[in-house]
Length: 143
Image (cartoon, rainbow, N blue to C red; front, side):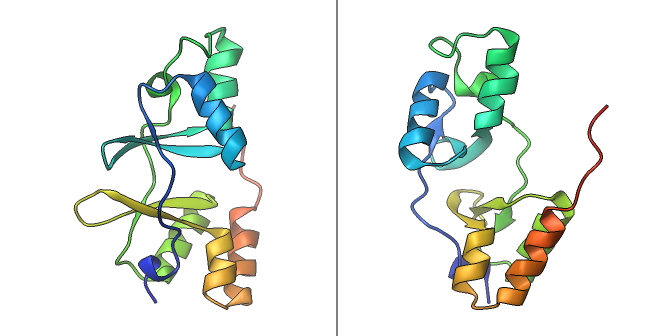
């Protein structure tokens, strides 16, 4: 089975010029803590609720004036829609991430795959459970 078979499509995105206050409102409305930052259909970063808190608010930046591109995570770990699910699972486990942006081979954002997608759409509860366990293993904090 391929990533494209289980991924969530029609993902809501923001632009790098989106104000943090607007991104935060969108996160609240969508009940999400992570938004892809795109330039057209091209993924250029990810903005998390943690980015808004730690990289902006804690540094005294004003959410009404600060843009997503200023605090987003630019180096994004992704998978491709034509990869096997096992490759996506391995990446999630190795990098300890719960949601992976999915690109096509033109490197355009086409969806997301999450632990929930694994659990619901593969029908393999063991795969989902084992992946959750490995993604959740304690990591050494940055010191």
